[in-house]
Length: 117
Ligand code: HEC
Image (cartoon, rainbow, N blue to C red; front, top):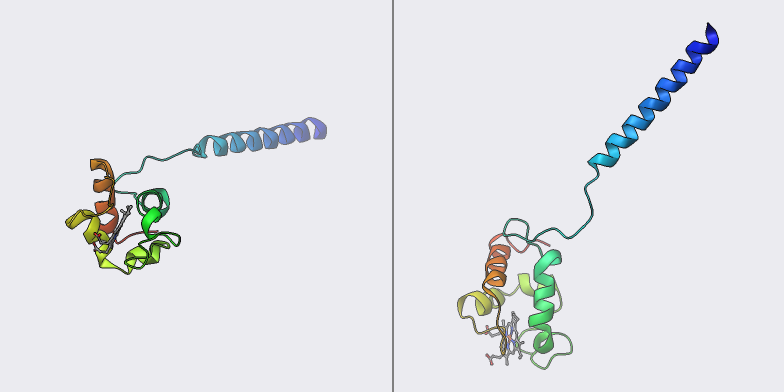
């Protein structure tokens, strides 16, 4: 009787391992773009690209208006209250282009949430 019981034990162990790995696979979340919302907006999932696209031409390290405000990353936004002000209050920036209503809402939420990285 020793052999069959060992067989069943190994079969059980193998079945358990299989069941566990299957369960784990099912729990892994699919990789892919998450929708940016006012609740999860960050510098890396939204704001950074927006500043890069809408401000860097003029205010980036190679821009001609860097003397007024130099955009060179998150800190340059965090440490200058004029940035949020120019976009959301006076709405003088981005000069020469516009932001969509949705971009404004997300930016406002990002500033309200204290510019998370
Ligand atoms: C086409 C060039 C251009 C773009 C793009 C641009 N700016 Fe400006 N920015 C200027 C100029 C020129 C000034 C100088 C003041 C003026 O002419 O309004 C200025 C001034 C500023 C100032 C300082 C004065 C103030 O209004 O408080 C800040 C801050 C600023 N810009 C932020 C931004 C931000 C943030 C963006 C992107 C959302 C942006 N700018 C996009 C040209 C630009």
